[in-house]
Each structure stands twice: as C-alpha cells, then as structure tokens.
Length: 336
Ligand code: AHM
Ligand code: MG
Image 1 (cartoon, rainbow, N blue to C red):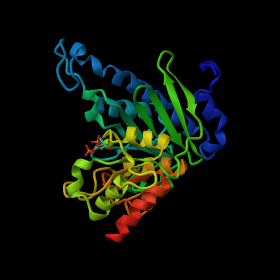
Image 2: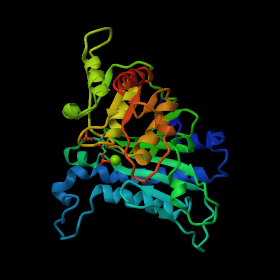
Image 3: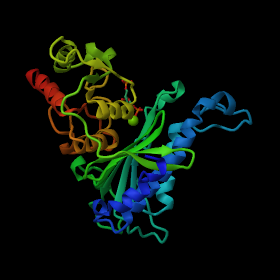
Image 4: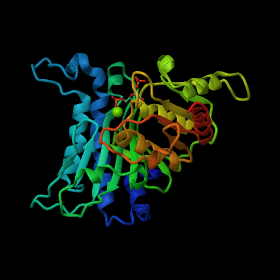
C-alpha cells in the first residue's frame, strides 16, 4: 500500500470522533497540539548527532550561544504549544517541580483538560544515539471549570485517564496512543511532516519471550524479583527468555508490546520506591499496556488503582504481557 493510501493521524482522529465524544472538539485540538510538538522535538532530536558542528546541547556553541539541553527544550516546546493554543487548564511535567496553572487570555480558563508528561524520557541516551521518548497523559480536571487548577486535579488515579500516549524518537519517529478504545501507532514521514497509521490495533501477546530489567542492580533487588529473574533464565518450555534492556523506557516498552515481554523496574536498595514516576511514566504506559491487552502493576497492585499522594511519586513497575506480569507477581507474593 502506498503512503498516500494510508490514513494520516489527522484523518484517523476525525474518523474516530466517538473516542473523543465528551470533548466537543477540545480533546481533538489538544491532540493536534501534541502531534505538532512531537514533530518539532523529533526534528531537534535528529540533530543531536550534529553536536560537533552545532555545539553540544547544554554547552556554548561556536557563536558563543548557549545550546539548550534537549530535555529542557522538549519541555518548553510541549508546554508552549499547549499554552499558546489555550486548550488545557494545567500541565504537570517531570521537568518541573510544581504543576503549571494556565490562565486564559482574560484571566478565565474554561478548558477542562490537564496534561501530565515526561517530555523527554531517557534523555541521557541521546549522547550515544539511542532512542528516547515523550510520554503523556490526559485527565479531566476535578475542580470546577473556570477556577485555577489545584493539586487535586493532578493527583488522580490512572483509571481516570482520558487518553495517554508516547512518542518514540527512534530509527523512525512514532506516536502511539489510546483513548480507552484500543491502541494505535503512527509513523512520521519526516519529509512531509505527516504521521501515518502504521500500527493499527496494537496488541501485546499474553505470553512473551523477553524480560527487560537493569540486572546490574540484581543484588539490591527484593527476593521476589531475584527469584523471578532466575525463573526467566531457567531452561524449561520457552525459557530461558531473551534479555533486552535499552534503558530507555519508551523503547523497551514499545519493543515488548510488539514482540511480547515484561519490563521491570523494581525497588532496590538504591531506589527504595523504584525509579519511575507514577504520574508521568507509569500511569500512561499502564493505560496503553492494558488497552493493548497487557498488565501493569507495582508487583502487588494494579498501577492505575494507586491513589497518588505526590506529583513526583515513584513506584516499582512491572509491565507487559499479562501472563508474565502475573508470574512475577506470584514470586513477589511468595516473598512478601
Ligand atoms: P529519566 O526520566 O531520568 O530519563 O529516567 C527514566 C529512565 C527510563 O527511560 C529507563 O527505563 C530508566 O530510567 C533506566 O534507568 P536505569 O539506568 O537505572 O536502569
Ligand atoms: Mg523519565
């Protein structure tokens, strides 16, 4: 099928208006802004290999100008794109200590959505030309429309998400999202700046053959995780599983959705609550994984049912093929 006969993301959103039914166009416009910001960031990330020519990000370039670090740049692009289009009332970002309350032009903001995001996850991978990603999550505010947003609007359970997605800046740039009616993936044609539907109805197999974990932390892991890793490595049935760990969450998750697998970031002596953030990373990925037929837990409880208490709260993360996550949970409960 030629690229021209494939559906674009814009066309797909129009076709799937029933997914955006509560929004009276607001959510559609919000998505259009995210799509635009993703293209801008994608273009910039692709220039990262030119550091010798344009100056390393975070350092002065040859003209003596300060090159902005890419994660700071991505944060600003997403925030400014959303603010300029006046389509959200609040933004929470992994890069910002506190949430941003957005006032409308006349001081009144009638918008009902808030966005939580990790604008450039895994950014330490950029220097070595490894894929990075953006993760985003959209909620309806819980406080009255027209008043400034409060923490309560941001500290919502993952179950309340209206939509979530990620952008992967890899060998190609892809945008994958869900509004609670399946998961669809779109690949960017950079020559014309258009996302095409390349991965319709994405689903993750119930069983998989890949486990992804930073095994360098093995000695610090809880016993349940150690036992599960040994189980993954044992010779039986389709085991030993293949070990694949990029260290860039979006890439590890994307691969595991396509191939079947489990991703683990457990607690460790170094990271007593795990490393990943509930609001910016785990909830959106959990929503996508569940919509693709998989499972996401903290080892004991469903991620999307956790009641958040802090914006930057960290949780252990076990996510991927349903049967693999359930097996890992079994080992966790045996060692409770
Ligand atoms: P970041 O938000 O500071 O970029 O950290 C998140 C990243 C994830 O992309 C990745 O899965 C994880 O940290 C890797 O951590 P580690 O190097 O400890 O294995
Ligand atoms: Mg991150």
